[in-house]
Amino acid sequence: MSEMNRDRRARRPGRSTRSPRDLVRWLRTLARLEPRDAEQYIADHATEWSTVADISPGDAADILEAIGGEAAGVLIADLQPAQAADLLEELRDEFAADLLEDLPPADAARLLEEMPPEEAADLLAAIDDDTTVTRLLESMDDTSAGEVRDLLAHDPDSAGGLMTTDIAALPIGLTVGEAVERIRSLHEELEDLSYVYVVDDQERLKGVVSFRDLVFRRPGVGLDEAMVPDPMSVNVGADRAVVADLVQRYHLFGVPVVDDEHRLLGMVTNDTVLEAIQEEAGEDFAVAVGTAAEDSVYLPIRRSIRHRLPWIAFDVAISTTVVIAISQFNDVIGTFVVLAALMPLVARIGGDSGAQTLAVVIRGLATDGIHGSDVRRVLGRETAIGIFNGLVIGTMAGLLGYILQSIQAGPDPWKVAGAMMLASWANLILAGLSGAAIPLTLRRLGFDPALGSNLFLTTFTDLVGFAGFLAVANAFL
Image 1 (tube, rainbow, N blue to C red):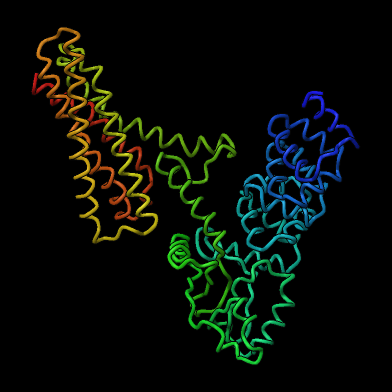
Image 2 (cartoon, helix red, strand yellow):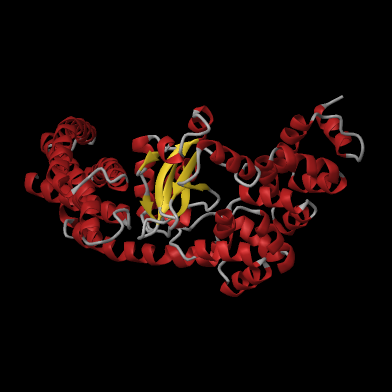
């Protein structure tokens, strides 16, 4: 029997003999290849769908995203609230937010209450309609709604926007034995007990102790003796890059978040930091090429157009300088037709070289690895790289120019080769310099270093590559 026939039989009610793990893998593959078949199978096998959501919420989320549309909302509504909440956490925030908006407010609020406050806040932040957000918060119980409101008050890219408030915090006056008993009563409510924070009567952070250290300490020892005093912490308003740097630098499982009075508010886990780093990298790439950080393939077409069109129009405007510059050399192009074929090469290698520098410098700025005193060193380094690479690549480009001009039996192939070599060498030097200078200048002016940097770089390298090459050729020829 073919695999296709076996799959068809397995879709019929009561005929699935797959193990739960095999079922997950098969259903995920089916959803990607034939989403409507997967939808029908799940509708006919509610118990199996519940099993998938239980043992692998991440795979269940992939299945729902593959199915998409209103069907996804129906399938998630068929689950128990706790299962549906776990599944929502695994979905992309934008997709999960759309599902919440399609549910009755009472049902959506129930799911939000089942989720950790920081996850619920992320989903509500992804909803564009403030009225909908307000309605959902009003439908939640007061305690859950209050926690979510507090998190929504913080910038999503700050420590406050990333933190979880589900943390183990104990008063400093306890003994180790008393602390262990308190934690035993908390373990069902808290997912992460890697760190136990110690606070005073004013909720100010005084120390931290790992659960492992508590277990191996004598029960009568005071918590103040077992803890590590004055642990590393971040202010609630700190940027996510600061939090990421602390986690990476000191290999922490989490960073406590405090307010201006040093009161403990929550903790940013290393998992959250990893997600934030990945998100920031994607945002930097999007901004560098001239679109919004939140733009994605799932964003409504109208909003994507609104984000992208202004930058494309701006690109046309600044690229006009390249067109005007090239038009000044119509005579030399008409005399040496081979120049028209060689121009794109000079511009291309300059653009590629500048993009390499741009990526290195933006990454350095993103990780706070480039300070004011490093600017000259960075510019000098990239210029030196451009000089060396320019010599090698310029020689190769010059050889190509000589060959092409010789094949066409045109005059002065050596002059064409010399113009090609000099222009390529100069363009690589200037590309490396501009690839470093553009993001550094943007940061100096108070902008995001990645903001449209690729557009500025491309325009500059095109100007030098096309017009600069023609200017050199005009002088040589």
